Structures are given as structure tokens and as C-alpha cells.
Length: 151
Image (spheres, rainbow, N blue to C red):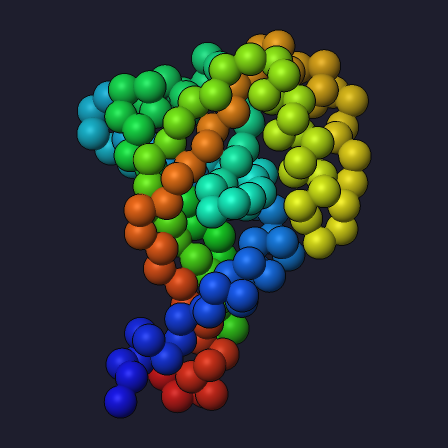
């Protein structure tokens, strides 16, 4: 008999759909004092990795350069019975260069449930940005609606 955790997991197809429907995630890095540093980020998933951009001098990028271990959480729902989400633990690679940043802007717009073009202000900032590529090592998911009101 499957455990409660196994019962509420999102299947790989459900995870892929969830990532297309949601574009905001909480990114956790580790600061110089060893504490979590959590920020909201727009992202997209492609080929098993997660991509986002940031200014190269941002604290989260400084943290990743020091320690590439990160966590990413995408969650939705207002009540316990509606909670759905995915937490990813992995390593973050920093991809440098304006071309890489512009490619991520273009891909992100097409990867979402409602495709959109990159914002002109974001494209103009590309020379100052880097790409954060998160390669998952562990993925944990949950869909409390699968409990059928049995919490």
C-alpha cells in the first residue's frame, strides 16, 4: 500500500503541466553566514533544468558563486486541501553572456501556458544579467487535493 507521501506526489506529467502553468518560484541560496536567502523569481523549466535570470551583482548570484547548492519551490493553493507544489534541491550553474540571457528571455516567454514576448526593459538589461541554471538532484512534490479532504 502506498504511503501518504507517495499518494500525493505529482506524476512527471503533472509536474510538467504545473511548471508550464506557474512562472514564479521561491529561490533559496545560502548567504555568507550560512543562513537561507530566499527571493521570488520568474523561471521556466526545460530539458530537466530550471532557468532564470538575475543581475550579475545581485546577492543571490554572489551566494551561488560561493555555494552552488540551492532550493527552488513552486507552490499554489490557499487552504491546506488545495496546496500543490514542487520543491527542487540542486546545484546552480551561472551562465554568463548577453547571448545566453537573451536566449533565456526568448525561451521563457514560449515555455509558459500563455506565451509572451520578452519585456523591452528586460532585454535592455541583458548585458548586466546572468542566467541561473538549476540542475535538480532531488524533487519533492505534493497535491493535497488527492487526499480527498482526509488530512
